[in-house]
Image 1 (tube, rainbow, N blue to C red):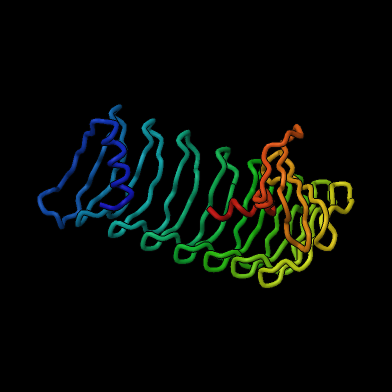
Image 2: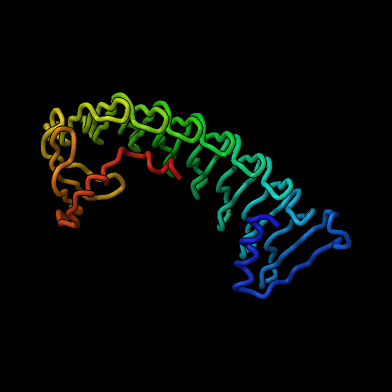
Length: 273
């Protein structure tokens, strides 16, 4: 019995009295159909077992009767195209597998049906170009992978369509020139990186005034995905002293030397899942 089935089976044992119907149990080497039901009578899963492993087409349902996922197993491992649905209906994602590993095209959707993310896997690792979109259908980011690591161009965008960041990755590390912009189009940051080392840093406020020039100055910057502001000192390309994090009402939330780590280029972290 594969890990997917074992996990589900244990979850239901903890909560419910199960009704299990199995056919063709006379010989353990024979393929036989298995069904399992929720207490309300709806199917939980329908599939086949051979040599105590999932085999052939399997379908899983939510307790409300909505289909959850469907695809094929081969000797207990996912194989070929699998489809997944939201509990309320609507396609959630499509993924291809080979011997249980992601392999091939990948598509994920928002609950409103808009495409959320597309990409490609090779031997279980992200590969080639990946893209993300908003619920409104706007392109938010494009980034390239090689053997599971960021490699090549990265671009992120505001929902208006204007660019928010551009940079280059090399084998998982930032490389070359990185630039980010405010939503009004003004430049926010320019960072020069070579072999993992920062060589040059300039930062502007949203009005175009220098905050940090040639790697030194006082830094104010919006936190990606938050409404707060990070403030601190930079000298010789490095943060010094304690940094502050203020909320959108200008209240001091935290003060620590690690606050600097809140600063990230937009739309990159979500690709690391």
